Image (cartoon, rainbow, N blue to C red):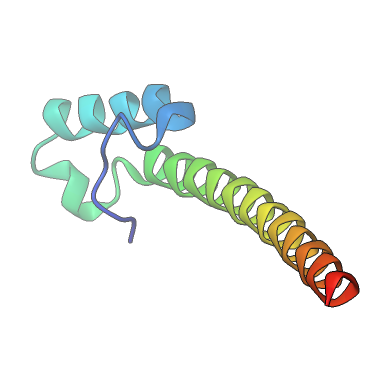
Amino acid sequence: MHPPLAEHQQTACIEVMNQLKACHDSYPWLKFVGMCNSEKGALNACLRKERLERTSKNAQLAKDKRKEIERRWKEIEQES
């Protein structure tokens, strides 16, 4: 199961999203018995990769922000 898809949020997966949508449009009933499973698997892999990249980036930003806060606290302690 994947989240609601929005092209402006999952920019790296637009092509795969379009392939899945085309498969669903081409096979409206066969999609229920697995006709589009390969496209869905590719989309899930793409979304996972994008999520891991995003969480890694956010973790690094949080570390940088924490270092900046600690640096400022040291400055405040030295001034007082």
